[in-house]
Image 1 (cartoon, rainbow, N blue to C red):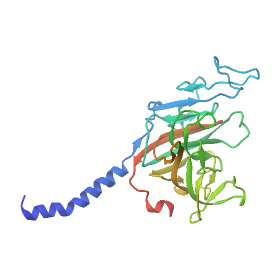
Image 2 (tube, rainbow, N blue to C red):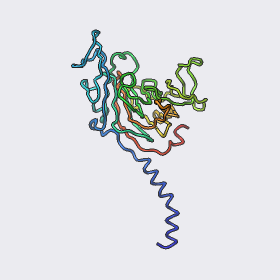
Image 3 (cartoon, rainbow, N blue to C red):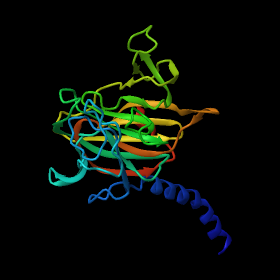
Image 4 (tube, one colour):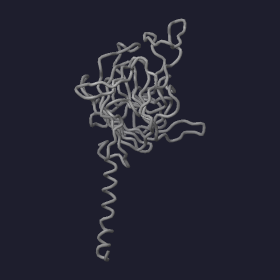
Length: 288
């Protein structure tokens, strides 16, 4: 190669590297194959006493005293069905628990679609429908309320899609104001530009309701990069959290990686088009 050709190659090299990085960042990988639940685990906690689960211990009041456990699903809480002409994961909601990726993920953009079914179960048969996407899930099953792993929850509940919940004590910093000033246990309201509230485990309410009416599919995006996460509902960013961490015996430590859980929580819900891609930055226009 002559000198002129070499200089031309060097001049274009940064552009080539940048194009490769962009291509890699934009490459989606399905998290669900559209056929079965290969690559996923299930965990089901103690059923409500109204459910018939043979072989599970009960007390004198007829209440179950032990969880169903990992990869046991006698009530077919998790299944693959056809909804609106396409394959979807059905979570019946009859028993509290989760559908959990076997792999761990960090620095990613997760996208999926979710739609409510019609069935509700005790003890929430008269309550709003509820589920959730719990990310950076670590530790034992059932650490949170006996049903879910330690994690950060992207709330999926009628009227509340995009809220944040701390499961098993994970900690965040967030720009927010208390819903009830003066009450140290008050829920927080996410307000971009507000004074940061550091080290909270309280519920944080989304900045705006962007969900669609029941019966329609919602598209949800989750961005996780380092100790930052952003919840996006139907193209509108509704929550930004920073300082994601957990308490350990050695003190607070960043929590930036883990499994992904989709909750079963007394309501029928469908999930589809679940895909993930690596990121090196959160796009600037996401929170604009």
